[in-house]
Picture 1 (cartoon, one colour):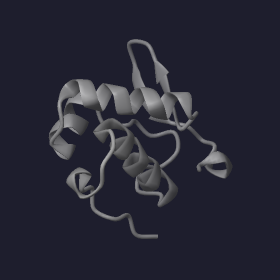
Picture 2: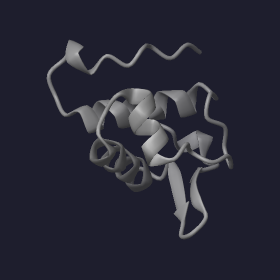
Picture 3: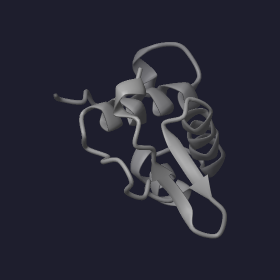
Length: 86
């Protein structure tokens, strides 16, 4: 499964939602495997060319969707619930 490029300027909407959707697609495609660390929010911000706040908001959305789990002082990991990925 191929993940389309991240182009937030192509459609109207909130960039953090588009970023969360793109990360969810990467999880679905297996690019981000279950039980592996999600890159840090700072690294995601650099990778996606967005602010740190936008990356944090996208991560928060993924957490609410149950796609990632954050363990304090350890990091954020891809949840092992592939059957639940939207």
